[in-house]
Amino acid sequence: MPVDTYGGARADVEIPSMLDLVHLSHRSLFPPGGIDICRQIALLTGMKKGDEVLVIPSGLGVTLEHFVREYAVVGSGVEDDPILLERAQERLRVIGMLERVHVQAGQMDGLPFRDGIFDAVIAELGLTPRVSAESAVSEMVRVLKPGASLVLVQPVWKAPVDSVRREVLSQHLGCRPLMVIEWKRLLRDAGIEGLHTEDWSDEETAFRPQITNPFPDFSELFTFPEKLAILLRARQRWGWLAVGRALARVREVHKLLTQERVLGLDLVMGLKRVETASEGVPAEPARDVEAPAESAPGEEAGQVTGLPLFGDKGEGKR
Image (cartoon, rainbow, N blue to C red; front, side):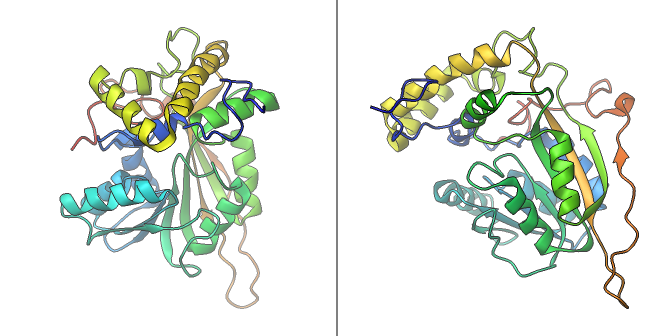
């Protein structure tokens, strides 16, 4: 009988990822970086009233709701998980935002929009569990207006990681991290220029050796009753066998993540190349911009950066 080396589940048993489990919470949580990274994105992209903004995957629509409320943009979101999409629509209906925050079903490698209509596209955690990074980036660039902003907020490998470890961690987290240099190559190849990068890894990130538990975003963000409720919902969707294997894999991944700091959270942004009107020739590429280390977000006194993967304890509650 086929087995999963990390957890012992049969190969035909779908094991929920950590992102899957977090999505089962009834709390509305900001994605990685919390509300602070949303504000930074708005600043970097020059977000303003009337801009067409796309967030993928849209999850429960928390980020998109923030942009619509605070900047009066026209917000659109795409989600490939039908259960999560249904919950997002119900949440938005309850808070009276369903008419202003438009979320719909779609795949990250087949966005349901025509070419060149968005002023900004933001890609958050959950972009690549089921599609390749190349195809997702290609689609995001396709729906962007020339000169418009593409922003990635993604977990990235901070150290060389062998293929076996990459696969184990990717399956557990529910996303497939790349190194920053890999993301930048993909963006350039797709026609994005003037790249700007920022490291948003929390100083007390879960992936540093001094942290006892590798996933405080799940273990500490939720109370015991909340965690129990999440596991009960997971059982209804995947069954106890899959949930048990997921918890077993938590322990296995703990051994890997606490050996070294292998993951961080980075913001990577660029602009879609503009072609000259006369000859269809791309304009001169803009130079890449690296954010200086001393001004990394979250280091100023009193600034809240949130938990390393799933938002902070104080923001996004309903």
